[in-house]
Image (cartoon, rainbow, N blue to C red; front, side):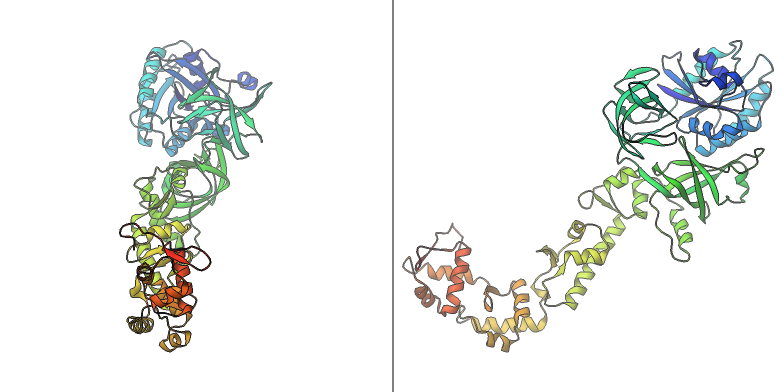
Length: 591
């Protein structure tokens, strides 16, 4: 189905025309019918000549109900603009047109009513010219009379052409149903209605309201019960959950939108605001059926920051309509459309930060690449909630990064690791958590993803090869290995190690660098000592004692006992009883 809203000056025959097209009464309230004036939104529907079903959202034309008019027009993808032939272009015609321009509506049809009372051609000419100047383009026009039926067939055909040209909505898009009516049904509970522009709602779905999660208990579209509805559609949703929804709130897909009360926007002034006089510091922002007071902070040029009185579910690219309700009613009160550029803007604390922010957003677009240049590191879920489909591969897990920023992070990490090694030469490497803090990253996994050779992650630290061993320690290790070359299992005593300049920290650094093997506290041997010892012990009659092993290795009991325990743990030897061990058979090439 399709949805079209009406627009136009009060008492120009909008409701009469809808009634003639559908055979239904769009005015719901007794007061509306008594006064002959649309006060609330009305709804009616019909089948077009092509067989397509079309629902009308009939809006009030009186200037006092402009907010209600915007609630009806906002979610609708197209408009039937109504002007009376006997009265022509009027003040509310202008205000409604300015509102459509601010909202960015680009699909419209002009219906000139009361063609039985006056020549419609002059009105058609002026109205089409005014609509074209506003950005609606060359809207098709039809002269009609709701009273006599003149031109209704041609208008139906024009409506068919209008809806055929509308973009196809995405059935998989996240749901945002702006609520324009709330009521209770005995035995069913709370029901809300609205225009679903895209996405799909099904019975059993869990959706979100500001008060919390709700579940869809039932659905109706054009008074027909359904199990699922895909936009565009007029829907009534029966909800089960806590809290009472209100008009102006939105029923949304959980996690599909960013609830924001602070947004950076690009203004498109309309009407009287085009003269460049600027905006008042306090306005009303409209989107969907929501009307929220906001404070306006100019940042520079067309870029401004809006602080909303309450958070709204928004995407980049959404358009807010800014209205000054304090203006005289003789003036057009719609001042601008505001296209959302950022729903998570940064704080502006430095002098000149506002100007810098405006310059940064001047060329911003509502896509993932532009968003990542402003927020250089975001999860896929954040991108989707902000209205941007992730492009390219994530850098780690579900994290996406701006390529230039990611490259810069890699350079900063390498410099941070080198600086840490210079300041802490005897530590095994920079702790990953310290690197995360140094780079200001939200996730340890991002640090690991940034590590490139010659660096690696080991035991929670970023390490490099033995070349990073401090020069004095490397020289001391060289002297020690020279002394061990003739008798590789005669580990020196603590005193000799101290003479060489190898205290506990230096030994630990050498072991971590892989240039010494730690057998036990204070006992170190050259790397590969385990394999060499196993080879020598395998030549002994099996099993063997500690004393036999000591003699074969040409070492002391102080070294032999912990070395045999190390070989046991490594699976090279095994105990036979309390006294004897034997070498375990090794696979080919094992030792």
